[in-house]
Image (cartoon, rainbow, N blue to C red; front, side, top):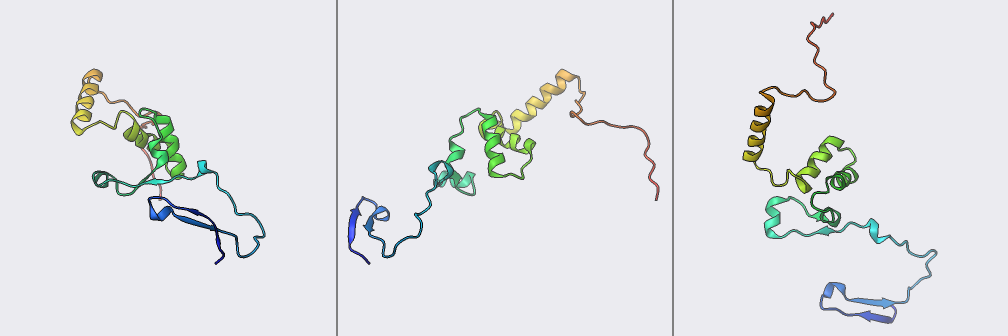
Length: 138
């Protein structure tokens, strides 16, 4: 090993470094990564370990409360195979109105909707129910 030309000492032993001249010439300079493309994981506390089964990235915590569209975009970037509807639902759960929803509040909201509509349920958009008989030939 060559003689050190610089040293960096800190309180944490993991971040102490010795800088030396390279032993061989490099054919090309090392590739630099843009810091905006790095998403560090934030370690969980003991309380958070009960809620989440893995550490979450910093980009997850940078999304503001109530910004459902940014949350949906985050889920779609992180998990490309996730459908738009499911990403929207997950973002509502983490950053939107479903974050504080309980079983009781959802049940009460369903009762309110049922009371307002007179027990009639709305058909999902794009869904058509055909009441004609279907003939299947084998």
